[in-house]
Image (tube, rainbow, N blue to C red; front, side):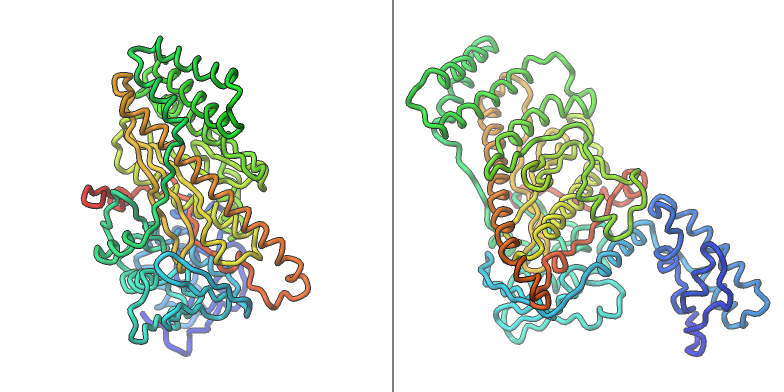
Length: 536
């Protein structure tokens, strides 16, 4: 029932202990389960205790209905509340994350940064509204999170004023108009556009708009240097593992004896040498790589991430791959900042991380391995993709927090990465902030061919995959260094004139959700990513 206006502000007259205090401190119009869930049981890990909270809610409503001093209208209202269907676990968790994110956002009058963005000029106003060229305006409060049930949602307007909007604005409009259809954990429900070569727009994205997005998207490729390619060819043209091993020794000897090599050439050949050593170990290893997730990692993933990590060293960033199950500190930091996490048991344990130990220990690449090699568990694979997506959003948010006085324009160049090892493939994803959206892009993909007889094709693809990933990570470090310098230059000005700045940390506010297999698998098997040859 709709509560009469005269009773909307009604509260219990006596404050009780435990969760019942909620009904004395909140107006009756806010006694819904979502609000109760968010504001009570602060000592619990709420995502794991939803059933208990729902039970307590029903018991509290029953207790209220039996109080003698309660008006009959309130008793009837409470009875109706107890009969209402409660939100799903996913809806509760997503709404809690969105509202926690919203509380974190503060928009003040401040600076405006201008700069070119692929597909058009983007005027990033870090003020009370954001203006796009062509006269398209939207409220900054709508940057991340269209479609929630807040009071401000009615104020979120997108005006096109007779002009063809850019793709970013069209996506925002599309998300707002169709938000009710999206699963709470889907990229689209959280202002994320998932795309890339071979990625289908299904299940939710508009196909024509998706094709525009793909046409406008920059694709970064880094060809193998000829020196590296020449020595690789000698190795892959061998007939057996014994000859392959001899070619590795020849590369090692060449590095030591050739006096004409420049330092850059030496580093290139050392990269190839280590690559070939790891390939040889993989071919020689007697274990069954289908046995379990650990075998998958040891044979096909960890050795190459270790190679990539140690070769990301520009600006003394000290890149390094941490294997095993390192905790994603970025996720813990963000969940604590929003008040969602309450204990260390809720940490996100990854399958590996590339961290920058010389740059605030930033996490640059996250690994999720979806079961054993050739595992086809659809739910596990899709869950891990969504886990990784939210994980790298947390990583991106931490960079915005650390370098808070840099511009949105500079920040829009920053990428962080997610490698998913699933079935027989390695998928490299990145995320960046652009035009009020988060661009979740599959950079590259490689199919693993474990047999030595496939080396002619596979090793060329694998070394290109490793090289491209290394170069992408190095470019990310370059862009982070630019962000760092800009932050340092602006920091002293902020001390004296804080009113001029809106910190980047207040502008970049993705919704961050920690997903778990036990709580969140339901429905994810149908959410993608879906693969389509027509988009190759």
